[in-house]
Length: 113
Length: 244
Image 1 (cartoon, rainbow over the protein chains, first blue to last red):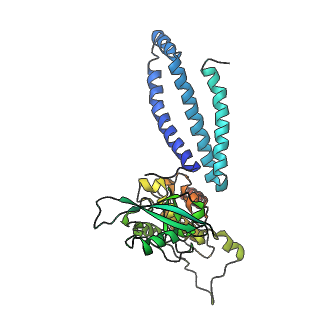
Image 2 (image 1 turned 45 degrees about the horizontal axis):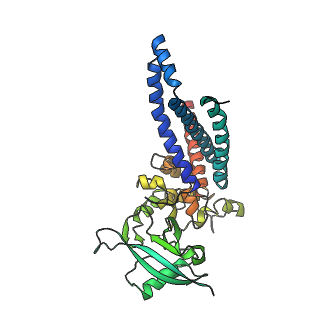
Image 3 (image 1 turned 90 degrees about the vertical axis):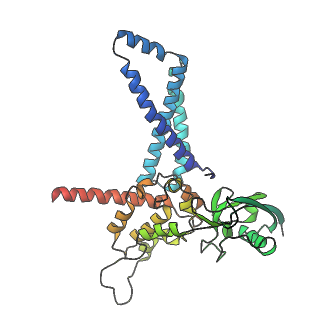
């Protein structure tokens, strides 16, 4: 189905994809936790977590969590009765706040700051 | 007069001849004040009489000429030529079965509307003249009563694309129209008909419906209201059951 994307449908698509990614991430997270059985396993997991690619993945995870959480907050506000005319401004507001939070969080994850 | 040449690219489908939809192009000259429906009329009258589309009032009241124009659902009679680029692409309303060219089968859409009991229900004895309403009470449903049931909203909704049994935004606006009507007494029955998995809870607040409504109805706002009322009703029912 080809249909002109709008701000609302963009927000929905981001919410769907990020929700799916977070669901998949939970399984990955449980798998990593299951490796922490002894000091050797713990050291091995910690070493893996220091790899640049994993750190990049963690920064990506932060972006997905922020995006999903803030858009979920936006949808909740709108369904509580915040006026529909504000839905686009709420999205771009959430985007700006989310971008700021991402920068604040991603700098230490990626080893800067 | 400001005359401009347009290319109308139109999706065609004749079930008696075509195995799949095909595309036709027509060169149409339109004045800036003319609507796209005028252009379709010129094609049908002077270039290809087999072009099929619905039209009736041509003034944004009947909703017949709803179609997908340049990727977005709109009324052809309400879209001015001067607001469009040189190439204008016409397709039938998405997700509705195509009967021919730009004509879709509206029955599935109208059946959803019937599910919300779209008529006044009040078992109190009728007054001598009429059931009166104050201007303030009428104002509550002012937006919902302007719906012309063109189908632009429901056919623009990704939730409807995924599930054709989903009631869709137009049916919710119709339900809200009676829930907001102070003369109606069937709020509980209507809410129970819309508050289910293929009803209100399938709306993910995507706002495509609001973007396309030719009457500028705050459709998602009305859906959110029905959601809140349904939750209230369910909670009140639970408290009641607990006490009983």
